[in-house]
Image (tube, rainbow, N blue to C red; front, side, top):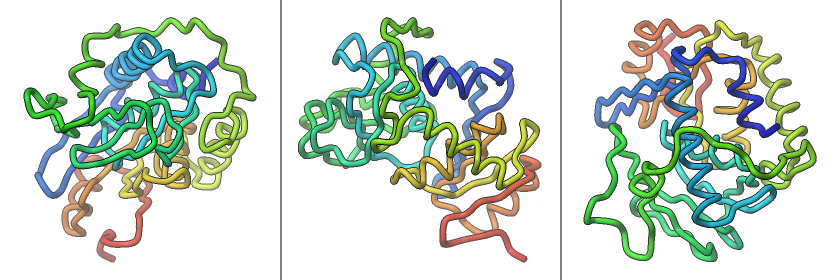
Length: 240
């Protein structure tokens, strides 16, 4: 069973799983477990159907913490891909609108638009439009290949090792399925992905992710979303 299936199995479909704020634009987007699962399925289907991604294939994710990034990570893991941060040698590399990915076979530009809009006619040169291409794929993923626990999953670490580490960190934080985690931790490294994303999902908790955080706004988000745990990158934090 893939990492994605193991992580999402405890969630009820209608439950809010990821709520994303961008304090620079004032946007707020909430994804239920069912909606995020659909985006993950579309991503997995696209990777398999278009680029023959299979268990162990290197897929680079060089994106900020964002609801679209969550769908991409879960989609990559659903089809057994090994997520890496260095695009060199990757079959597919996901990058932000102005990003580059030297050494990857395919560069997929991700709009990071709050409402999930694609680039339209303004697709960055030398890239494919992830949103436009993945959107037309199926809302469920029927894996054709078995993803074993020994499959490389994140920067060379196996699926079993990644899940064990994520669960251990969730335990250290005392997270449960009732927890709502306010986080500004970025996902641009394996450590960031593990600490900011995987440890939350491994507990069956809900994530409130804030991009471009402002200290005063963080306090408001914590109250509005009724968060129970906070984790921060260096930078703005909740006022004492």
